[in-house]
Image (cartoon, rainbow, N blue to C red):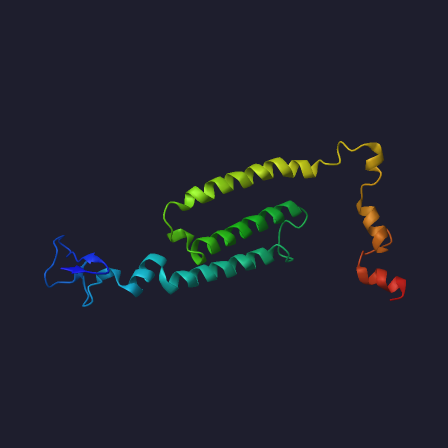
Length: 177
């Protein structure tokens, strides 16, 4: 017996069944077996339960990212640790959203044909451009170096006195606004 939507119905023993719609040990009157429309989506995409787990994980990771700015954060004097932690949390959250909410986890293997070259290109661009941006002032001429901004210049532009708290409200109060 065959189903026009799903092809021949096969029993658990591997033979085509005459009157039996048993597939994988489950009987179904419509001939869908374990591959019914609702069950098929839930089976391959994890159902509502997996989305709730991912949502809870995203909430926990968001809380962890806020933790870096709390008074309990142990590495207050080394902001690089906080930046690395925030980057790891952000990448993990992006990976969860891409894999589950964008259904990339359930795609065929062709997804690697698209993502691996794009990933290699982005790593290459980062390795080439970040050092260039970070060391751009190293080879400036003396004349050009005189026009490069410094943190002191920013404070002067904002009207902040050296050694003050540096708030914009304090500079507005000085100006009489």
